[in-house]
Length: 435
Length: 59
Image (cartoon, rainbow over all chains, first blue to last red; front, side, top):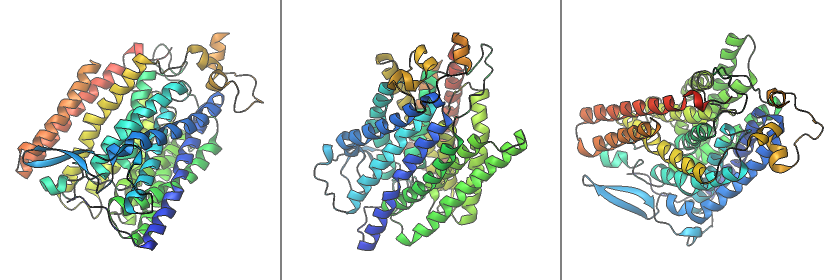
């Protein structure tokens, strides 16, 4: 059976609160990384958009999202198929009515889930950097926080049908993802890919022949400091998720913290080594994305792995993210300035798969099959859903900024002031083209 | 081609769900789940190719 909501001792409650308190650092870290990887003339816009997206995500989740996601013991909507009950949607009340916010397991779950949806909503910003209108961004966030994320997260974290694959069909412990590799990062990464495709590449990114031009990120300090903040936030996210959604012993927080750090470290190092070999010097942007990919991949099985296994999972994530970023840009024509599709989308998919291949949970084919069913659901249902909704939104409210906005920069065009007022001229390809 | 690709993605997912519901033997269920994922990969390739058309790239 999927785990039911545990009853906590005071010490566990305090530990959970402490872990959840640091989760916003992951959001801050990703915001800084997205900003650093974008252009200087869109930096204020990116940070302002991050605040806007967090605000909208939290409010929409409060209004309707939690009612549809619920928690482990929530009432749910079921249908029966092949003699088994499929729990597909929570039946909580809107506006959090009836939920005591008192430190109980359901209230802690709500708090973590609300922060998780904010983190998921930040991810597509990296893919839409330098060309995504803020109004469209906020509307797209409403769709993510109000429907896509709660629906899938209910299936995984709210005693939904994916988590019940073990009880219903004998597939191991059912779909496992304690820290959000799938619920947060794959959902965010697949939305990021949808946004990158719907918006199209930045002006000047590709020549008429399709050759990509390098548009480097503008601030390596933001990127690397963002990585350090993200590490702290991730330890909180993975630790609190393991206690609340998998019911593990609070003492396992130590293992989770060690595994999270090792996975990020090996991923970042792998990315740095690969870029050093290929370009003679380590590339900051790709190493940062590798680090994030390692964090993302650690989340699903952070409590089921031993430290050596976490190193392996992180190293594979670092290599996968580094090589796939180039593949997306060069071969597929996907302009993703923040590397969100690779770091969160592919990193998340690898993390989910790794939970079925490596670690104590991977004891037999059943668990692997449960993880593959989860991956199939992400690709076969969540991706068409999020693409379709954003495509429809684009028909109603154009998501890409006007050409003049890209030429001026999003800061001046949408906010009227830049992040760095001492920069008065732009000497890049768009300005030259316009002269 | 884009819409067809997304429909094939959904069809692949339907095969995975059907394998869970209709097949009881572990081996057959596994084969059909992998077959469904294979169909999804086909759909994904179609969607990717649809977005790789020259008109999709910036100038």
